[in-house]
Image (tube, rainbow, N blue to C red; front, side, top):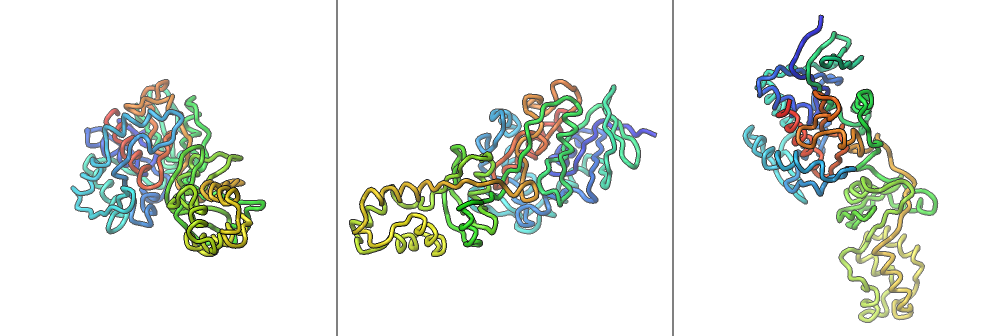
Length: 390
């Protein structure tokens, strides 16, 4: 027996639940199929369990995509203020951290409960623990699971990307997109720690040390903390830059962003009997300062060092070149870059141009946000765009 709906949504994550709520509240008969035993699993672990549910400054410039203009329409029509109004309507207390990041005061469970309540308001049917065996397209879409077959004229792909596989994440969205002839931009880990090898292995010796830096990859620079790990580099600045980094390319780190371009020469003039190592220890954690000083190879008092050598050291500290040998992969990536090509979709509705009735939203699409609530805002905005177009 085949059960019929107006819309079937695959995935009960942030984008899928938002889309379902909007569609259901438009009096559509909506079915959400979720592979996991419960909805919103990635929401629950986000922000240390407090859910960094949006960023008040989110705009198209905070997203990476083969088409940087694609996200403009959805983000303009459903803004961080719109989601914040929903949060406040449910009485969920929140606070703003650095750089516009908004978190729940309590628990991420409140965001999941809110989304489920919104779905209930639209009489959305949610079925968890459903393993999808096949998806077929004829007059409409038929989805078969271990519990039966379901059909609808509209289908929404909202199963996310393969980041954090221990949460059950897979590349199913991309496989399904390809099945329907949609181009897929090669998926890769994003917001992910970078690994170091070769001569740079010595930086692993200071695992646990962090410092405020500016990390730059492919011209995109981020001023936040970097953290040295037993495998390489992490911390917010590195995670941000990792989305722009490509294998084989350099990563540049400014270790002294608060210092002027010739600060060592200025120090030589004012404190000629001070050493480079001492100055670095004033600017950075001691263990990091010592490694950098050793690599610079400038011993003795500043007054005895040539200006050219100090100028070169300033330049190197402001643009220290690392050559990461890889990333920690999807297992440690917060999100996936790449995905179903935006060239295949309407930026207004998220509907596939070649397959009427097929939609893709959230992380399934080649739109990747920065760290700090931006990916959730894309989930809400793309979910609403599709939900109102179904």
